[in-house]
Length: 223
Image 1 (cartoon, one colour):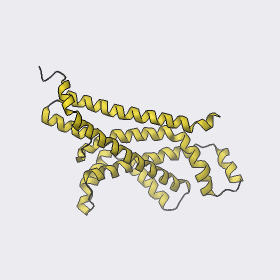
Image 2: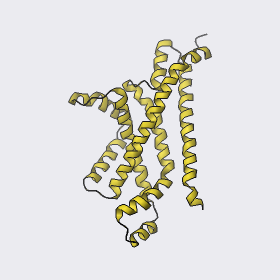
Image 3: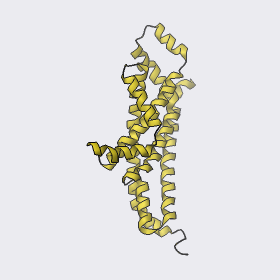
Image 4: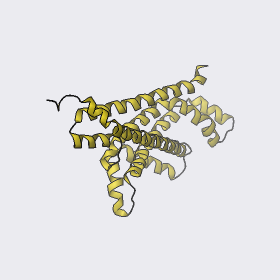
């Protein structure tokens, strides 16, 4: 019966290892979110400016990523590509795959925001004789960014939570550490509780920062 009760002493002893895993999870999430946002802006720029060939590449990329499981993408990159000579360690592979996954969804977020801009706004810009690239850089992108923050934040949160899947390729993030603890100690309840608290804390912090950013960017609309 003692093995069933929640053991706070065990959890306290396991906390240093769990915090190391949480630290790596946060670092991975920040890097992948930054890369995915950059991919999103680059991709939507190609689509808006209708750059030949690249536009088709971006659309094919988005379709391929959005219609296949993230775990399969990880296995393909980490276990499949080495067979043709393309190799990367587990952490780098995880960053690349998770960034590419998030980037596809950020492209769709931004594309939706751009397509939903008021037509009079674009017509007024064209009437002024502005070049398409200037219209995009100085009007379309800033306005679209203000409206798309919630959707981009949802994708960022999903990217953070999906970092748990990196345990499948051996990245020692929070989930990997917890599962390793369970295998060695058979203390599942304590480690799953730590996972719950760890991810909840990170996601709530991200949501709070996103809310502050949304309020700040929305001040111009409120006037």
